Image (cartoon, rainbow, N blue to C red; front, side, top):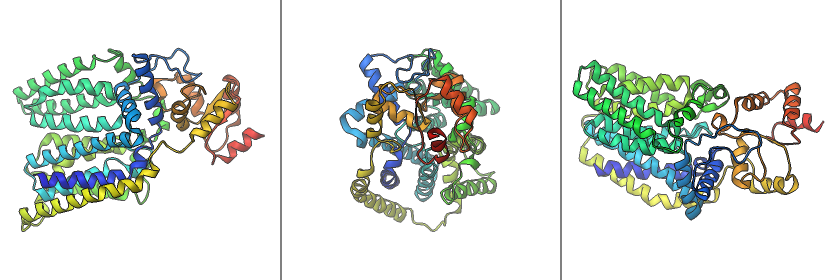
Length: 452
């Protein structure tokens, strides 16, 4: 039903463009672009960090090298506007794919429009910055491939595509491990049903996808790099790995809470009604996982779309005229298309790198403190890399355990408290011979301590 697709893509593109500055505000965008430039310049993926003075001989596991290269090329030719289009295109494809899955499952145009619109408004998590999952970062392809893997497994007949998709995914983002989880869920259900044809299909797909993951610059070490981000002590300090409760902000969290309550209520009400059991299983599993660690809540929204559309179909008024609904959706979509240029022009002046520090700030450090032993705030690291490309060697950045040794990370996280731990600061300053500190301006107790 093209009217549903036009409506969803147009309205969501308007919404995403209106949040363009947030989508470009990812703290790691700077180092991703710099890494892409470096890979293109060297013709190879570097195995050691060239931008800090603290990484030592630690291997750098760049799990997103292909996204970095693509973003570097796009940025070179189109600037921040083109990078934003890259992210929004991922969102548009996700919306199109989810709508197609819901329609194939038998949901009406009205139910599909409501369900997919709600999900695609919620899963990017714009209200929980910096934890934005449809952004100018490698998170976006992981969202996209998770949906595509889910859809292809649901259709089953096209599982032969999965290894080719995995070959891309493993080089775009460390979240490729999620693909095995999706296939495993479908394979597990097939096994419980004693559907031996399905078991064979998903088993072959799993093996082929595993072999595909080995085709990357790191070889089998890609799993070592991925393991460095899972279960690491640094997760305690990164908001996306913290619980849903810790990431709740009011009133921004209210729409998501309403959706979760509605999903649970409808699932209980229509538990016996036909619905793909794999979609239900993944929805519930990621709902609980998302409550435990906020980053998984976005996957709950995505996987819950098909059950939600089918449930909504059962509660919407039966007297709705399908032809009139399609006309209304098409009209709303065309209105969105007409509004899109005006929204873009309004947002364009704000499109750019995160403004935590400016290029002038970085140039000041580069000219006034060229030999500095700099202790920088974590969130400023990616920006320093982007602006100075190592001319101002930094202490740490968002690459965390994929680039820095554990001892360094423990030393850094001993400092990030509002109340100053003087012994910890003295120890780190002495250990790394720090003579310059770049921190958050609002941290007045730290400023006073350092000046004194």
